[in-house]
Image 1: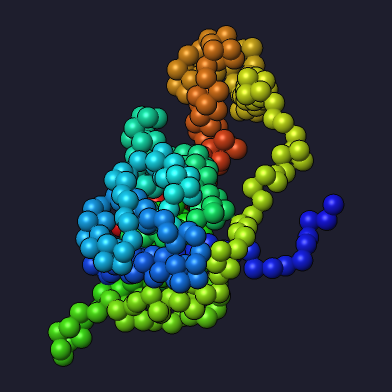
Image 2: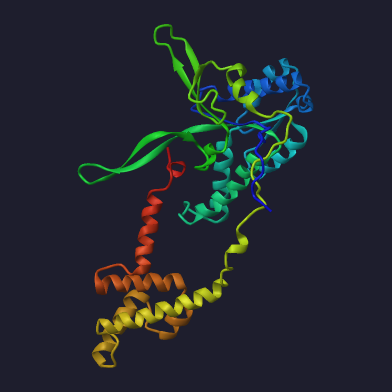
Length: 366
């Protein structure tokens, strides 16, 4: 059976994102978009327009836009939570009972997920290896965001992107290079309509404006444009491009490459093999540096080296009881002293430390 079929417009639901710093008008503009969308669906006699707007509220924003929603003759239902476990549940519930789901702010759900993880895993701070789990969990939401049979408008706080560079003196530095949504690093890629809100002031009149910069519009109709004090009319070209009331398809999440990947060996088996490798390397290292012989001098020097780096001279403890991570670390310590260079285990750790120092912008504190 072919993977391909004749193309049609299978984007029936709005997937929008608003980001900005404090006071930039994210919530107000996102709500205006949601209200306008419901009114448009009612004009087109799309049944979904008769359902309430659901607001997943992390910072009391729903209280301030409730009058505008009510004035438009639309019911507003609110859930006040910052728990990541509620985020996916809310999308599922809203698919059944909402015309539009507003999420404000998506940033809090990412923060809560990372905080819960560090608390449960008893981390003082997140380690490089933790990000694979966290990003995997977050991806369950973003996949749901794209595929859900639901109009979703999410707001997120803005944060700075950073680039690493080396100055003329050879010192490594970090500088701001852009603005992104403060959540997991790839969240901003998911919406089909992505808007940066900015608060601006006319210095002559002292009037304050909120400007919507269209960072991404997959329809191409308003991409790159800017609207001062935006209304639904400004976003309408993108909305009318959608196949409202039609069939929505994101991507086929059931297709995977699982059957093409060989199952891994049990961790216990792999650790046993890795332990034997380290022991073999240790024997060679000692032999190469005159510490592997049977003479009294060699035995004395070998015992001193093992006691210093492995904290024991017991062959049984080193080969059978010492945790693999400690065995590798102790071998690397001895290797550095004898050769002046890190071992393969130390090089790997050094690279991990360097990578951790170059974590993407969403993990750099701002």
